[in-house]
Structure formats: structure tokens, C-alpha cells
Length: 127
Image (cartoon, rainbow, N blue to C red; front, top):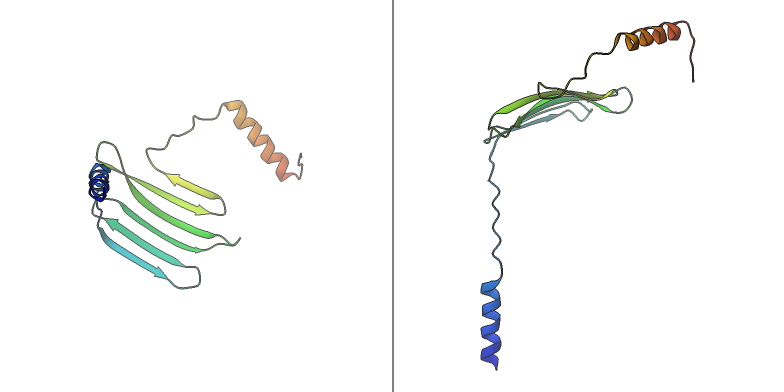
């Protein structure tokens, strides 16, 4: 009986799925960081698969960090595309040729925006 239990345990162990991590191993080639403890920082990271990230930041006027940076993102065809960005009190603003651009505003919308700006300058505010 003990022999049968042992055989069953061996069979279960052999039949159990063998998990292997198929993710590629990525080596970090450059990892440079500077921080002055006053909110100013700079970092640069580069990996052997072509990914590159760089950023620098300063304390913002409203308690946020103002950051300027860039990163290289891999594309399905094996090439890379740079994305530059600014993140501050006005939000995250990326720039890249991959990002869609809005169509130009129609003339009547531009006129309405101009009129609204003129009214704001005169102190006329609608809520």
C-alpha cells in the first residue's frame, strides 16, 4: 500500500506542469541617478535591448515635481521611437511623431475663442 502511494506521488510530480519564464533577460547597461534631497533630480537608464530613459526634475510651484524627459519605445517592426515629455502643473504633455495630431479648428471656432479671450481681457466672465 505504501508503495502504491509513493508511486502515485511520483506520477503526480512528473505530470505537474513545468513552468518556465519565457521572458527575455534584459541587462541594465547604464543606471545613473542624482538627487540633491531638495526635490531636484536627474536619472538616466539604458538597457541592452535598446530602451533608453532620461529625465530631470525640479520642485514645482504648487507642490508637484516639474519633469522633463524622454524615452525610446520599441515598435513592432524592431525600430524605436523617441517620446519627449514635460510633466508639470499643466499636466503630462508628450511629443512624438507617433502621436495623433488634432485637425485644425474651423474658422468659426477660432473666432469664438478670440471673442472669449477679448471678453476675458475686459473682465467679462460667464459661469
